[in-house]
Length: 186
Image (cartoon, rainbow, N blue to C red; front, side):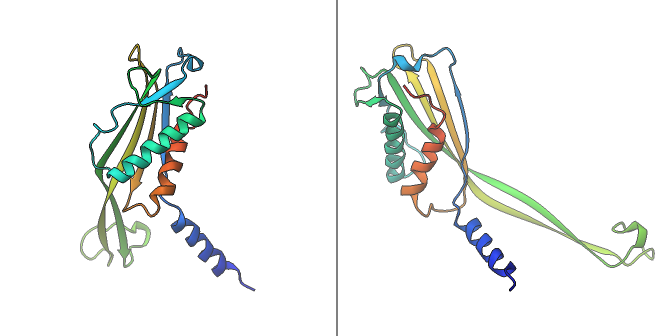
């Protein structure tokens, strides 16, 4: 029994079922003592206007808040008393990907695919260029000491978004969890 068609079909299903992948980077102040902080507040979430819908903005805020609570911090809405201010920034920009494919036809013997003028060979080539446009989205989470206004931790998630997210209620919390995974617990 030949299982190759079944394997190919399953592989294609897995590849197409996976959503966009998130590339994550983070950095932090190595001199900071995160155990000294107890509370956090989302800093100016309403003032951040951008290309993200209000629904997705709320999903991001809820996911970041849930991750901070899971790390042992208590959330407050008062930015004047919170130990930490968490700033969420979303950035989207259009990107382009260019690829070229050259097909060689004919013969040229040892010199293939080179063509040295008329009569030396009957080779021809055709080059096609493909330009694909996509949206490059970044989510940046900054955690700042409220009193000193010093940046303590920054996490960035970046992904190519090739269309509307199929399940944002699942994708956004997973992406935020991946970004926040390197944030130190209390």
